[in-house]
Length: 326
Image 1 (tube, helix red, strand yellow):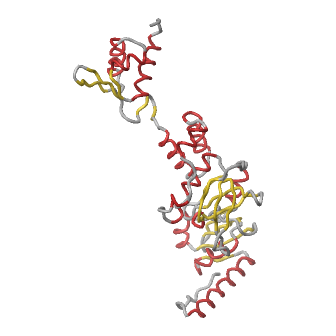
Image 2 (spheres, helix red, strand yellow; image 1 turned 90 degrees about the vertical axis):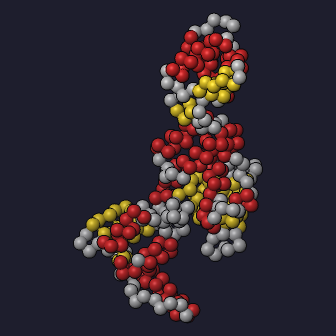
């Protein structure tokens, strides 16, 4: 064995133990290319210095081990754990800290092939059939985001209950109460939003290059959405919410407010998004507790209220409340 510096010997011995997590001292010494006495001294010094190493006797053999998941000055995540962690990070709002952690995990511990293996291949929907509600296909979609792979979605919209297949490059999933996928639609060559709870099936697709969309475009899509929905035209809506209702809705606004003003009559909220009919139903739900100040939108909400009353009357439904939106 050639001469080496003490720090190199320590690094070699500890590296072998960290790779195996538990090893006989004689085998550890062989793999580290040091004598048994050297291995014993190095590990003994490290243990006395505070490292959580365990030394046990098994007959005449000495067994060294380290706790699962422990790593010097850090935490050890193996392949499957790293994949799970990446999926959880993807569920957080996009931002510098989250994105930096994702890149550090991918760069430091996972090659492109290892990313694919750790998060698993995109599977047919049957594998995910046991999941409930909006989370049914979410993990499959998030795997495709991590892997930067195009996928096929069988998706049904409001007027398309049977559903059709769409080839998309998934970019991000937004929205807590109603998770929504923002993806590049290959046929339409544009960003589109898809409610995850309306996804009927997800399949891997070969031979389609993944399209990565600039983050600024995705941020604009999110900022103009109503809880992820962007089906209407871009418009500005001003609403006055009474104080009691504001206490409920303040921390659960399904859109990004451009301006919030506190007045004696209530809280004025101004939003600019493409929520369209979905936002109108939200405004209608608050009745007299929310006054719609934008004339065109107020007319749309009143028309929607009238249609709702007529539908309930024709179907013999419950008597509607007499309150109407302001």
